[in-house]
Image (cartoon, rainbow over all chains, first blue to last red; front, top):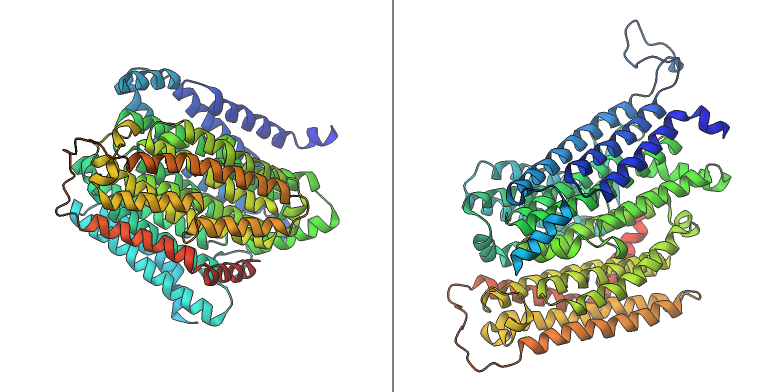
Length: 123
Length: 496
């Protein structure tokens, strides 16, 4: 239990990941699924940012000469977060455009209802 | 440094730039650029394979000027180069074979977009094969997902868009888990390059420190990739995605995209986690069991299906079960059998999809079994090719499917605990395969009275030629298997 309070940032990130994951998997509404996707991805970025920061250290930008190693944090986790954000933005855009396509055709956002309509269309 | 060592980098960049070029070119020119790029990359990979066989060792290639723990790296060995060559061959044949259907299915202004997607897909597949950096692998997994989604929905019908949405949802769940696994692993080891991570993981495994987080991240990565490559309980998106998309898409998706993820998983097992650590974890048993279940339930669903393309799609589920069973057996030889099955399944499944397109064309465009009766008489080439594919899938000697079943059985005999389940399920699965594939072959060779709708065979020299090449590929894999298996084993040794 002690560890949980020390690493509460990571614990919250995991909680958010599970919430987002369940939303993306279980919701019928497409927009809510996309929101779930964004929660899930953001949770991972929160986890990375939380892990990448060490209290008391500064950003690794050299202003007045290089100080010793302990003065800076590792910049890679922040870089990974940025890369990840780019990826998840493009994926969300793709999902939203697909949703728009489906909504224009079937006037509903419910994925199960769309499947029923499609089956009727086939017959 | 030899000039040949630049080839992996050239291949990835070439397909990417070909994609960019396709966006401004008209339809026909885009098609030629795409085919040219795929062919050139195939030739480059063949050259690289020859070079690697001569030197007999793999090499790492710096991307930029920063050495090991900081910079990004590419790594090439016999297995990677061979896979790249094979992927290019299959992609080229699928594109040529599905070309006529593509012109019918896809609106004219969208066809050049299709070639952009194909190029992007190839570049992401090549990057997955060659990369030595985990985060780069993740980014290219997402690129692969996006271009695959585009390939599914390019027809623009309601069915395909819905299939694309379902595909995206499952893949995004998978890539989320993969990303989380990579992040946890990065926190545990402090590295992103595969070779550095492996050293640290070996140290962790010896000291027993952070045992649970390590197992959690192995589990997350394995399940994430299993979802993306449609292992049995996660296959719900697959039949729609393969069944309703255009032929080249279906062939490429089933034979390359899912295989790219499986190859990445093998890479993770050998080059990141380490084979011994993976073997000691219990995740290997989970993959084994789900692989076995997939082999049976995939075939059972295929038997129930009335739509020929969806039947072939369900058969993919069963075949992916075979591959995971091989991974789950946990020996070097079983892994080599899995790699061989990747090749054999890719060659056979794309052949089946392309042949099915021909059969459906001469049956009024219908995919239902009732209308397919006697289709093999209307399009002789497609009928013969479908029969070859079906025989190969069932596992008749002379064709590639037989060799992979033989290799799996041989691998199982050396194992004490897992011999019985593997052999029993292999047998059951073969019978089930035979039921639905032979049913189809008999159906298409049943003569019908009124033979009015004879297919127009003029001006279609390309299609029979592609089918012949596919059949030849299958027979080469089936007859000349020993050198290929040796190559795979050599490649796997280089891997570790």
